[in-house]
Length: 335
Ligand code: AHG
Ligand code: MN
Ligand code: MN
Image (cartoon, helix red, strand yellow):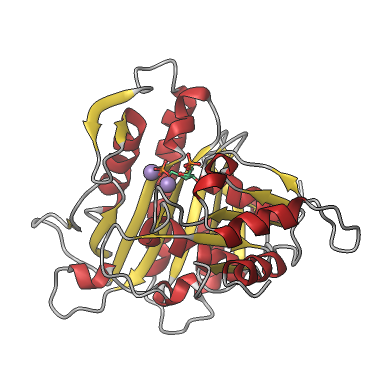
């Protein structure tokens, strides 16, 4: 076994923190708390099918979507792993309408956690990869308790972001603004060990990921871009291969490693796009930029969007630099 494989996520976070002399350790501990929650979710996802955790709860979430038992379970695990630590001032997540306050009996800290507890819900019962996405901001409001203003910060203010994929293995990928690093859970020792150091996304795409069933609902520039991607051209490596899982984390992660572009544009059905700024677009945009890629809503950088609503949606073009630039040109009518 190489030494690299003995780098636990805890050690990695601590070593990165050494480069910030003012760091208190609160932030490192926070990332470690998230890794702990991920282990608990991973353990139960692996048992899905054996215990009664598949299927729907019978209620709808704030987005009007059917809530699955695992959505609710993952949400609870993250909340309970984080509520008492004294490191967060509040949280917000895709499943709940309002911000999630820290219970009165616990102290508040300097950070805000935004999360999509279970991404790719529609794939759960079919044993397809699913994930968790998280984003961390610094508290900006005065007073001890966190407020909505702490959650409604643009993505360019994130101090860390990442995701966990419950796939063929459980992988945690994070950035704290110093590159993107991936850790695979070794279930035999219960630790995340460094497996993907300093991930860089290839500048050109070889893959495109989009729900092409929506073609007739897209604007014309988007339709032309997908036609362009499919038109053979040796010099630019077209046509790209089509790969679409329907779990954003899994589609994103594959494209991050192989080079690709993921697109969820606005369409007639979802004029603002489908994906959520705070829980999906922002964290992945921070990661992709740290890996050398780009994330755009077609007009502007995702990280520069000033959110005004906790559950705001956005069109999303994300992945390899050259491909995202090209997609923007088509959407803006420049090509
Ligand atoms: P979630 O499961 O958290 O609600 O996320 C849904 C997602 C995302 O993971 C995926 O990329 C997208 O919705 C797929 O949407 P379509 O089914 O419309 O293609
Ligand atoms: Mn999601
Ligand atoms: Mn979700």
